[in-house]
Image (tube, rainbow, N blue to C red):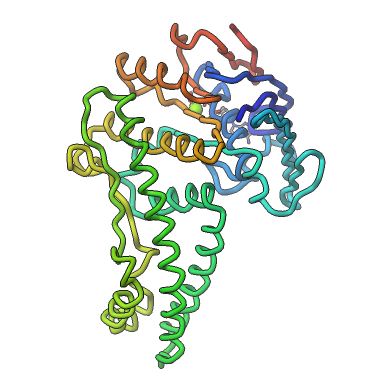
Length: 357
Ligand SMILES: Nc1ncnc2c1ncn2[C@@H]1O[C@H](COP(=O)(O)OP(=O)(O)OP(=O)(O)O)[C@@H](O)[C@H]1O
Ligand SMILES: [Mg+2]
């Protein structure tokens, strides 16, 4: 898919901005603090009405203003769609082709954006919660039913934890909740496993384009049960074994809400052993693999690479830029002129953006 036009009002440093983009690689060039990340943040916000920088949309309103507005024209398999997001203190209003929508998930039919930001370099070093967030977000974008499984699971988990906080735990009710928990666990496990298998099908290809070392790369999902056939029986046993600990700690200590994944290069955990450059290329490969998974469903996400070049050596920079030609539309930000990114170069200065070449 292609973002052909973007309009912003009062979004971060932009009061009024209107710009057309083309397919292929769009290079967003500008000095530090010129507004490069803010621009791509607006594009990302359009896809899931969430920022990759802040959980509070009020931060996105230009200082001293009281609303922001994003308008994007998107082209997807020859269909043109217009998306609008308006936000003020009363909340978000979303319109698709001028019609108001209530469900944010509707947006994903029209726009899908993948983003890499410098902090993603540390994805494999972060606590498991960060990786679970990555999994949940990407799986829900790929398999729509996943979100409701997750919501149901979390509702039951919350209830189970509440019961565990009682002085006298009602074991019969706890058992009922555990059974429900296991039902959704199994579904979530299946989705996660399927997603990791899909990623593994593509990550090798992506990584070999970004690093020619020919290293063996593999994503490992660390689940608390690894046997689909006997899932329920094993789970019941594990929850029984964990019961005393759960009652003592007044919380559910085991389950898919604790699961994690790691990535290995030559059978070594990249999060633990990899260099910073390796971590960057591996997490970038992980994120870009989603493009190829979605392409199988005839969706070619827009790719945003914020500040990805700053830590790459010339060789890896060249490999990456060459590889980007495979994607339908890419936004890549940087602070320096780059001979390989001469076409579709947009310069930002004084809160304005101008097409250079
Ligand atoms: N709500 C806001 N209202 C006005 N300005 C803002 C708002 N939020 C952030 N800014 C400002 O926008 C400017 C540009 O920020 P941005 O992160 O886009 O810079 P950048 O070009 O990505 O810089 P770098 O190269 O350092 O990453 C910053 O000076 C920041 O303080
Ligand atoms: Mg930036």
